[in-house]
Length: 171
Image (cartoon, rainbow, N blue to C red; front, side, top):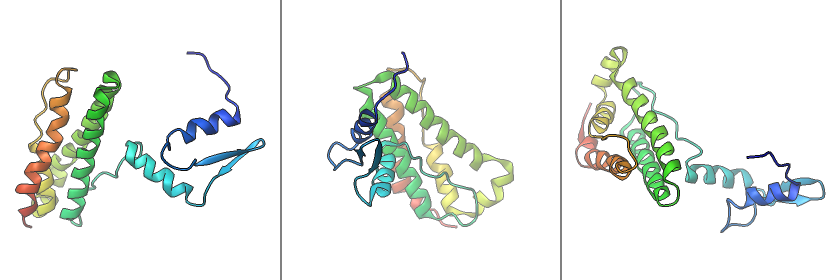
């Protein structure tokens, strides 16, 4: 693929294409561009979150983690898996790449919960024990294109366990 220098108008048009139902984010004004409204930062952050470009912050293992923090993080994993599932019909290769990133993200957090140095904190926190239980209910199978839907569905299965049983785990 060759590099192509875009004009300012072309660049603004590409950025605005991510906001098809909204008013444009930027407008070209001569040889400069400017925001089309004062809320452009908020709109951009919202779009980043919607598209998964802005990852939710990972859970840091501390005694201050709440069940609400865990529920939000689990919802993030489920929402992200659902977004990737939709992508399968459009671009299977990209969907698999995104699944791998999501799987690595959750694997990293599960690893952190399982470290010996965190055992005491996790063991004394109902929220963190529930989070560890959530990860224990994710049962991925071989990472192939044919198994992509199954593996993405595991995030919803884990969330179902959390919603039924995990939220009731007490300190």
